[in-house]
Each structure stands twice: as structure tokens, then as C-alpha cells.
Image 1 (cartoon, rainbow, N blue to C red):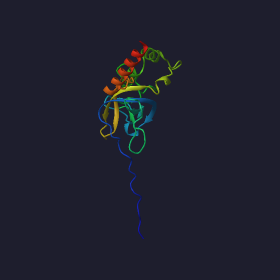
Image 2 (tube, helix red, strand yellow):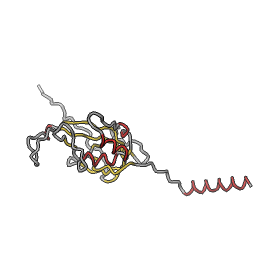
Image 3 (cartoon, one colour):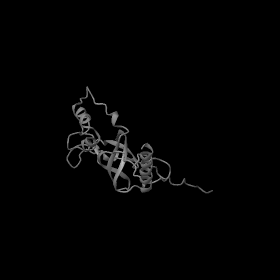
Length: 182
């Protein structure tokens, strides 16, 4: 009697996204534990509990419309630089940390000051950042997955450029309106 094994479950694979500049929408920040990162002593002699903060972004086009994979799912990206647990119950957030690097580009000056002044007893609510659009630098992981290397700053909508024919039609309409009013 034949014994058939189930076929290998193959994911959709990495979405096709080019390295370089792009626009993303910031969606969420969450904590994730990665067992393979757990170690008693890293290269600096510190323990690593495997916890990381991950920033989640959705790739959008120049008009801020969400871009989708062939399978119909939005293209979701995560931060490339690790935001590690500091070992003191929190995360490294000093000016040289990856966290500070990302968030100093994502927050307005008053928001950054409020975040820096926050305490465990009086935390800062960063929910206003969700849904904002940012210019970012995209790179790829060793496994070929696109990721947000750096947040450059807020993205602004650009006005659609008009064609020469549209500009001529507008000019003709303005001239006609001016002649009628005389």
C-alpha cells in the first residue's frame, strides 16, 4: 500500500521590491522573541534574552496607495536594524541606539522631546505615529527579504504634474474667461 507524504508547504516567497528609496506607512511596533538569538554571552560579553522590537511598515506608491504582492497581500516590511532588549527590562533607546535612529526621523520635534521626557510612571503615547507616511531606504536581508534600512523623514504628497495639453487647455479657458469679462 502506498504511503504518500504531504507536499512541502512553500510560502509565497519574498515580495519583489527594489533596493533604494521608497515610501511606507508606519503600522505598528511589537515585541518578538527569537529563540536563535538567546545567548549567555554575546560578542560584548552581555546576555541576550532574544527579545526584539519590530517596526512594521506597509509599502505604498507615490500617491500613498498600498502596494500588493501578486497573491493579493499588502507588501509589509520590517526594520533591518535590531532593536535589542537592554537587559534592564527595557530597550536601548539612547542617541546611539537603532531605536533612536528610527524614531528621531519619525517623530516631530515636540513629540521627540515628549518621548525623551517620558518616564515609566508617565509614559508617552505614540499612537499618533501610526498611519504616518515616511521616506525610507530599502535593503534586503541575507535571505532576500526587503526591509527598512533607514527612515529618512516624513513623506509628502506631491501634486500630480499636468501634461502640456492640460496646461494649454487651462490657459485657453482662462483667456476665454478674461475676454468674456471685458
